[in-house]
Length: 295
Length: 156
Image 1 (cartoon, one colour):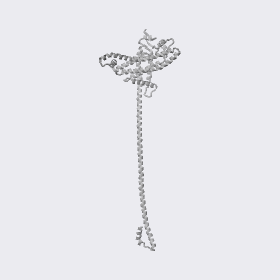
Image 2 (cartoon, chains in turn brown, cyan; image 1 turned 30 degrees about the vertical axis):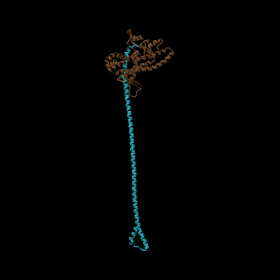
Image 3 (cartoon, rainbow over the protein chains, first blue to last red; image 1 turned 45 degrees about the vertical axis):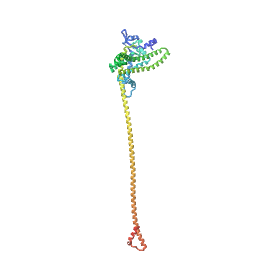
Image 4 (cartoon, rainbow over the protein chains, first blue to last red; image 1 turned 30 degrees about the horizontal axis):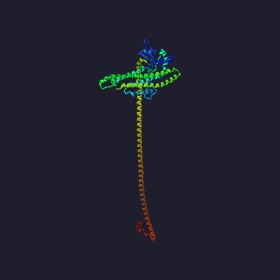
């Protein structure tokens, strides 16, 4: 628990604040002590907790998978190799199912997206106060961080920076492959000559700006919807965990009730965690497929 | 919830992870999977080939067995034929030999008969002469009547 001195609002705010490092308006570098300070830092600030957990989880993923890959043989697979192969085959089937072109990047991209997003989402299932409290009491003093400024958001996918980071990278990849496969002309034609078409040249010319507006919005909507879907789901899920956690402070009856709620939501959340990772991966494959296909 | 440098950092991290995953995770695992797939396919093909060969060998064995049976029955038939031939031959031989022996025996009997007749004839002559001597109470000149006796003997 975050302590009795905290009000519910403060408790929630505390949990929704990233550990932000950046330059204060007065020119000094350091951690933000509250949301307003973090906002004042502007763009040139970094969320230390998001970076730490996302990199840690990615490294864990790649460590175990590359360990299995190094020892991968065509013979009878061992336990870890078996597990890794199971996931790899699952991804491979998904990619084969919705991606028809030839591109060696798509499958590893889908694997990275799926496992990394899954692991980041999975952090949501760790009770909301475990890691933040441990950080506040044991780690923060080591770095001389003020306990009141010891924010710690452990679920990187509840940080839009992480989800947008992935979505924008994927978006740039789709634009790159669109240009590479269809050429500048083909890509431009795709943006301007659809969905309204006319055999009359003049009418077609008039339709170009309308088409461009529609297609451009749908193009931009892809990375935004991709990232916001994941962010929204995980943010809402974590918010509910936080709200349930408030109940633990509100007496025995509510606390026990909250315990059951927490259990139920956690079980339900396992589904969301997996589903969101799967949706993110599937949409990545679909966008890559759209970048490779001619209309 | 601010968008800040974390966005760029996450993009770089993401790209690095994808690159690492492609190079050190995906490639070796998918290669191993493909290799295993071909190995299994080869194994299955070999098993099928083996089965085919086995079936072929079985068919061949059945054929060989059939041929052997046929040969055996042929040999038996031949042997039976040979046996009956031998029996027939020996029967014929035996019959001819019997006939021959019979003929020889008959000839001997005839000879004996002839000899006995001769002896009988001679003896009869002598008996007739001695009988006539007794009847006539005198000696009959055998030489004088020899012709007549001989004629009589020949009539017997």
